[in-house]
Length: 136
Image 1: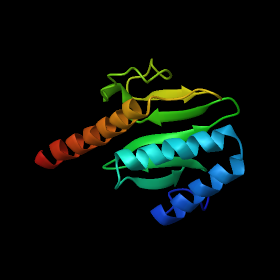
Image 2: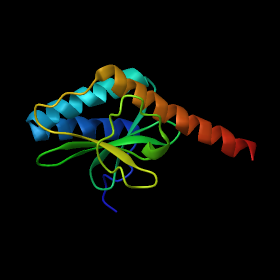
Image 3: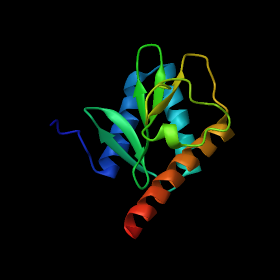
Image 4: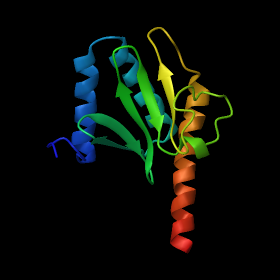
């Protein structure tokens, strides 16, 4: 396991800052923008760093990850198949039983209100699952 896996939140936030800076292009700008929206939607979200360099946002479980590739910034929602997506933002990983993703390419924008609603819905789903586990 690398020293960056499962970093403490403060360290993870620094590593995410570093990733954004290292990218130094539209992907870093987009990741920074999406991160700000996630923090606005769920102010007490916890940032973690997993799987050798993937920013992760959690509240009661994983909300989403923020991967960057050459041509796309991908936000993967761990329980996306169960998350209400009234605006139809999910456009990738649609065939799986649990995950769903949003792929954004250079120049593409996202409906900020719809995205923040999706983030809140994912956090609420985590909270509901945690509550049902504590009852059993």
